[in-house]
Length: 293
Image (cartoon, rainbow, N blue to C red):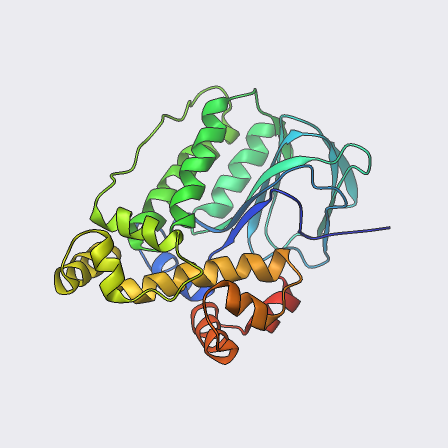
């Protein structure tokens, strides 16, 4: 039987670098109570299967919007159907799979924090078990995007805080369905946001600071000051984070060799790419691909 952890057409996934989590989430007072470690969307995830005999290091939320799947926990197997939301507490052995004929489409989040245990316990108590049915809510799916998109734009502090603060509301709408309707939000499109858009559109190139500053009609010195003050990172460092985020997707979702991944990101020297990746992620590209971090 074919089994896959990931690699589904149209999928999206972000694994936040562990050094970012340790520095910006686990020790930041506003984020310590609850923060996302991994987040994604798997559409029609045929052959999707995960088995963790020791459980995961994080709590896992799985929200099925189409198709079917099964989740086994405490030697009991549950069928998960459209509209159902399932919570897997951390460190608890589990196994889950998409249905072979009607594979599920799922939104999923891994999360931690000092309040996470209490929130999971609250959900299980309110649901009288590990799963519940969520009435269809376009607002809930919009809020998932509100959480996901800032993280896809990098790890400056405001992105982490904004996404994780919205995650509180998203999780509340799952624990107490029908009580909370997430509202819509818009992002301020300032010079820094424009520069990040420019970076994201040129991940296949090695941009210079001069090119970045020119893209938003600012001097290099003023742009560098504005960007660092706004994001906590220099423009080049932030650009490298975006490249590494893209590299993670190539490593997980494609068969490209390390040299080919580097070329996709505008880097002719695969050793330079490997050093940069290791510095950001804490593991080499090969280790990342093998561990499926």
